Amino acid sequence: MRWGWLLRRNPLLRRSDVVEAWTVLCVTASVLVGAPVTALAVGAPVVAGARAESRVQHRERHPASARLLRDAPPAVTWAGSSGSVRTMHQVPVRWKAADGTVGTGTARVPAGTTSGEPARIWLDRRGRLTEAPLDTSDIWLRGVSAGAAAGSGVVTVALLAGWSVRRHLDRGRLAAWDRAWAAWV
Image (cartoon, rainbow, N blue to C red; front, top):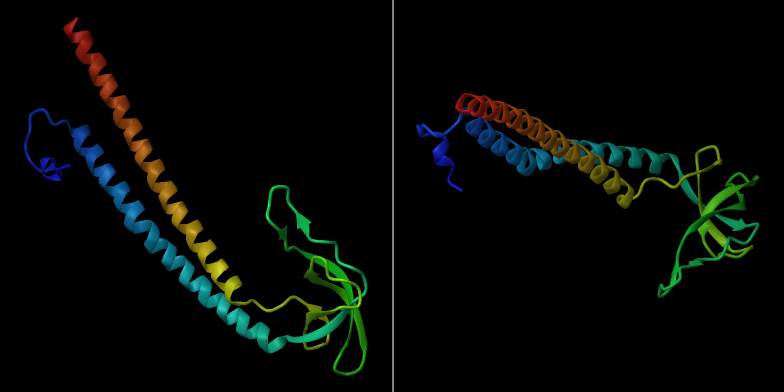
C-alpha cells in the first residue's frame, strides 16, 4: 500500500478517508511499537523490585529439614497422558529448630511423598515456618506477567480507539450517502 496518496490533492479523496488512514497508521504503530515499549517499561521495574524482594527474603529466611507426619496424596494421572502430573500438596511436618525447639506446621511437598521422608522447608529468623524465597522463575514470571498485562492494555486501547473512530466515520459516510441519495431522488 502506498501512503503517499494521503499527502496529495485528490477531488475524490474524502476527509474521512484521510482520517481513517491516519487512524490505521496510529493503531498499527501503537500495536507494533507502543505495546512492546510499554511492556518493557512496566516489566523491567517489576523484575528489579522482585529481585530486591528476593535478596531480602534470602537474608531473612533459611532452609531446614523436616519430616513428614502424613503421606502426601499420590500424583494424578490424566487419561490419555503418558505420565503423571507432579503436583504439590500441603502436608503436616515436624522440624527441629537451631535452638533445639521442635516445631510443627504444614509445608508444600511433592505428591506421593511418604510419611517420615525428609522435606525441605524454610524458616524465618524466629524459627517459624514460611514460604521459600522468590527464585529466578518467580521473579521473571512477575515481570513477564506485568509486562504482558501492560502491553495487552495498550493493544486493547488502541484497537478500541481505532474501532470507535472507524464506527464514527462509517456513520458519517452513511449519513452523507443518505443525503446524496435524497437529493438525487
